[in-house]
Amino acid sequence: AMFRTMARSLRRPAKEGEPPGPLDLLGDPAARPALLTDIDEAVLRPGTRGLVEELALYSRPWGFSLEDIDLDVHLWHGEDDHNVPAALARYVAVTLPRSHATFVEGGHTAPFEHIDEAICLVHSVLERRP
Image (cartoon, rainbow, N blue to C red; front, side, top):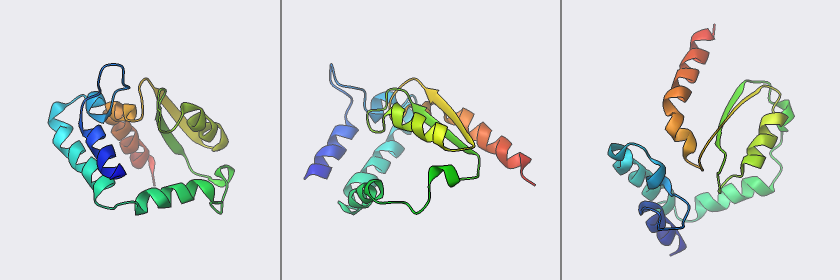
C-alpha cells in the first residue's frame, strides 16, 4: 500500500506549498507519459525488493572506497535535492580523485533539465577514447 501511495503522489502535480514533484520539474509535457510509465515500473511492479536492496547498499561496505576509483566520473546533481542531499554529492565529488561535478538549480530531477548538455559531454568523452 505504501508503494501505491508513493506512485500516486509522484503522478500528480504538487499542491500549494509542497516541493515540486517529477511532473512539475519535467519541462516537456510530451515526455510525461514515459515518466509516468517509469514511475509505475520503478515503484509498483517490483514491490519492496528494490527498496530493500538499495537500503542494504547504504548500510554495508561496498568492498572498495571512492578514493580507489581511477576513472573520470561526471556527476550531475540538483542543489535542492531532498532525496540525496547536495552535501552528500559534494562529499562524493571531492572524494573521487577524478570527479567532474556539475551542480544545477533544482531538486532530484533537475539534472534531467540539462540532459542535452550531459549527452554532449558523453559524446565528447567517447570521441576522445582510443
